[in-house]
Image 1 (cartoon, rainbow, N blue to C red):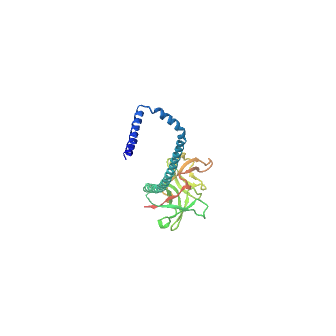
Image 2 (image 1 turned 120 degrees about the vertical axis):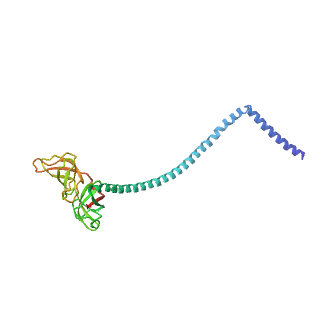
Image 3 (image 1 turned 180 degrees about the vertical axis):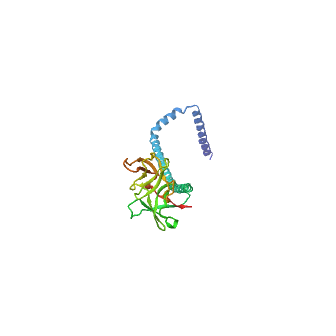
Length: 269
């Protein structure tokens, strides 16, 4: 029994002595050259494992990055769709507000009651410049009433009115004519449609002078179209010296191919 205890004490003492010796030798730097030899011999062996470990780590990093990018891309796509939807709704609201705001600016000027209408189609029975709107006699619409855009731009006039729809003749149609006035020189005349492609200012006395780019507005002399509605601007003279009256080409102030919403002036209050 004593022998076994002595053996255990001897082993424990030897371990403690070895540890103290190793600490002592390391403290004075006597292990530097064995460590150098060990690491020099171990580097070639450990190098492949280090490279493999780095590649494995990089591969796992790329995998996690791809998953993260896919998740972020999905979130961005959802956010983008949500923004497009909101912008579309805001754009429609802005358009409606714009029409209503401009309507309020027009109404006091003409002292008239107006009704808003949407373009709903074209009359297949006519080859001229006509379109149909979704309001009619039930809303107070009647023949010869002026049809305008926000801002007071003359589009044309009502030529036919039913209960819930009406037909509008555009100003650029050859059958259209309206009494006008040049805004600056105050020369009266008649604007006619030029085969659906433009406007012509006619019936101008030869002694009258009209300036290029001068604005042409309605004069109200026909009793149906209010005065002051914008029609277009003077481009150039197209009549010859031998003609009795002067004629001028007029550039329309609106694009007739982009009409969506109009206002009908129902009459004086």
